[in-house]
Length: 162
Image (tube, rainbow, N blue to C red; front, side, top):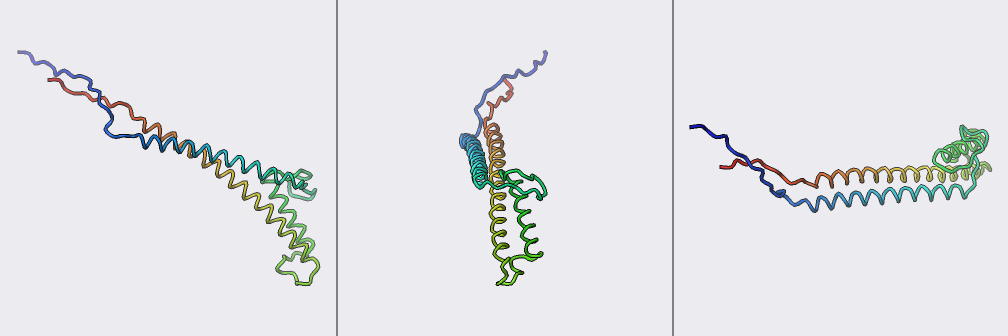
C-alpha cells in the first residue's frame, strides 16, 4: 500500500475586513495635500506681489542683494537688516525705547522699527506658505500610502483536500 501525498487546492477568499473607509481617508489625504500646496503657492505669490508693489530697492551698503528689488524672503530679510543698521546709526546705537521722548531721532527709529516689522511679517508669511506646501506634499505621500495599503489583494490560502 502506497501512501499518497495530500493534494492541495487554491481557495480564493475575500478580505476579512472592509477597507472602504481607509481608502476614502487616503483619498482625502491626497486631496487635502493638493489643496495645501495650492494655498501655499497662492500665498507665496500674493506676498511677492505685495512686496513688488512697494518697489523697495536694497541699498548699496546692504550685506547682500545690493541694488535689487525686494521680491522674496531673503531680500526682505536683508532690507530689514539694513534698515536696522541705518536706524542705529542715526540714533548713535540706541533703540527706540532707549531714546528720550523728546529726541527728534525717535520718530525715525520708530518708523524704521515699523518697516522692519512689516518686512519680517512678509518673511514669516513666506515661511508659512512654504510650510503649507511642504505639509501638502507629506499629506499626498501619506494619503497615497494609506490608500495603497488599503487596496488589500484577495487572500489566497492553501487548503488540504481530503
